Length: 179
Image (cartoon, rainbow, N blue to C red; front, side, top):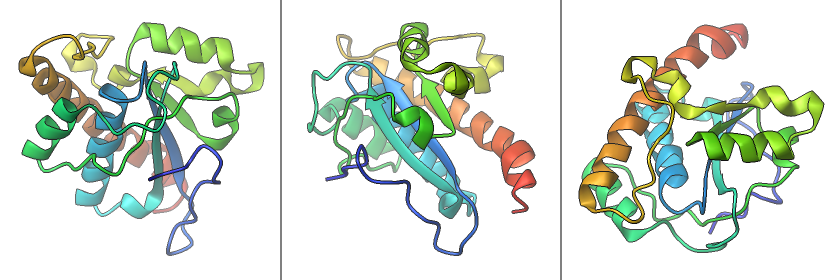
């Protein structure tokens, strides 16, 4: 079980600087653990997993300590992404000093993050779908109360945003870190 709320970001194996990313949704059992898992898989396929410290959290503490929703796990696993080791936690103000970017799944999460941020860290919170502008969407919809198609749609959106975020970070931060 991950207990990243109190642990410092991991040190990279080869001494290269890391980028610390936190994915945020409501309860941390559907969208944000899916985003964490998909981004981890995409970074791994690109040979860049060692350059990132990843975590996810919820704006509410409804599910603290619980694994992701089984429907999220099943949908992700069909695409080769294992979410089973993740456990829900609630986002904290300290996350703004621990993470370089806090990626909100929808505008409500972004508002919650902005309310929690101090002025010197307010520039760290973004909508995740900002990194998939071709989709023309701002929010990753919550699949919790819907059918299985909702979890597949969430995966499609998260895969597109993960690819866009990885490309963005390659061009900006990773390049600047001399990868």
